[in-house]
Length: 236
Image 1: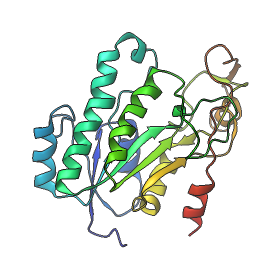
Image 2 (image 1 turned 90 degrees about the vertical axis):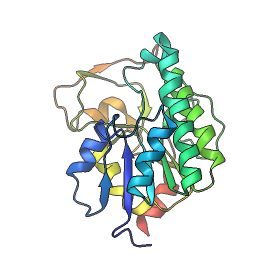
Image 3 (image 1 turned 180 degrees about the vertical axis):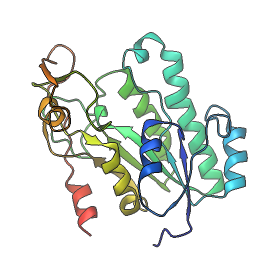
């Protein structure tokens, strides 16, 4: 299906991913509402904006993410933004028959053995991941949807240190942005990531000054995902 002239709304219009998407050269009709234009905590706000724009797709990227400790200190905010907000988006998209693409996280997997496939059992590693899985539950009820389990970050790697003993498959925002046209019409669940490697090895490619740090006491050792499904789609 050609995406030309198909309107695509991005929630979290001022967020990190949206700002990268604004700079990408894709010739697609994206709309980036701010919180005043589209408040995910108010169904009426979502509905009014979408009725005005009449998009074919909605990419739900608005979320409470970092710092992770926020999801322990303020669970009400975590629940409101990542679970209830997502539920509101799902209900309105379902009513208006808009294709929904939801940004989840690879941290919904247990993180012990790595190379997790989309159908593997889930056991979120922290409160942030639980909140994103809560959103997944609502999205799954709506069949005209796509869940993307992603572990992405800014480019270059912004932190001063990186885990040398934690394996994952981080991917940069701009890489995900370039994939959107190829995966937007898919349904179900897709793992989205890059090469499986230590966080340190990933980080040092764009941040030569990054220092090694152990994450054994902070994080599961291997939350990496199997991305064979994604690769097949991209090759087509």
